[in-house]
Image (cartoon, rainbow, N blue to C red):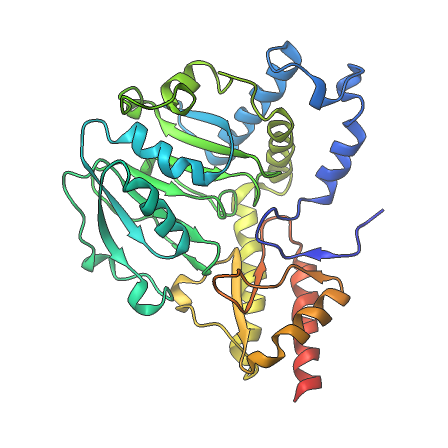
Length: 361
């Protein structure tokens, strides 16, 4: 039975219905084993096949070179804000950070416990509505790495090209943009992405890291946070989030069925353009993000008359359009248009917004 609501939540986000139904059909008996996938031991051949299939599918989708490890780790991306400097400082004392919103700020805040932070650029003066010109960036030649947040989920700001940082390893938080567009993995030292946007259920983070960056961790680094050890044990130093790993594999298969990230990028561009074009043409709604930096995953917007916000949200939910309330730190509204959101869902949202505007004017 099809679900009657559209979930525009930023995460945990909606999953494709086909994946949910497949997981449901296999929940009690995976591959005629008589066991649920949640009951299969992580060191068995059965789970090994699940893990290897998921990794290979992701490698196929993103054309991940052989000299990169792919790790499937427990917990979310925030944990990686600390784990990354533990692994990548490698005797250096500073790292470069591009400051474009709340998530980059949190990454810097945690990294400051381990090293000095050089703020390459900051969008703070524009209230995080744009990304400063790369010609004005202040990169440090001796930085251990350069970190940036590819898509600011809360603020609706996205990089539409990969930053040029020379020979310093580039680190990207792609939690809310991975699998939404093609990426050249070879340009990065490390990519990490929590699962709950475009990969699967919350509780797992995928890390793609160049093999040359592993091995020289800070002395106090816990073994579970050591990428080299995790790679050696194939992400199974302890019991991994097995169900999440399984669901990620289903999601990767679904991405392939859609035509891969190239086709999904076209779809995501159509979806976001549909909503942005409507907002731009309206005198009732507004989006303040620089058009060159607008997120295709998280469209933030507000009403010109903010007193109508609560009415808008209540009526939207009664019409099956859920989780449109903006983040508590940002206010307004936010429509997350991850891969699983169908184009028809965005059309329904625009139709509702048009009708709400008509009834209020």
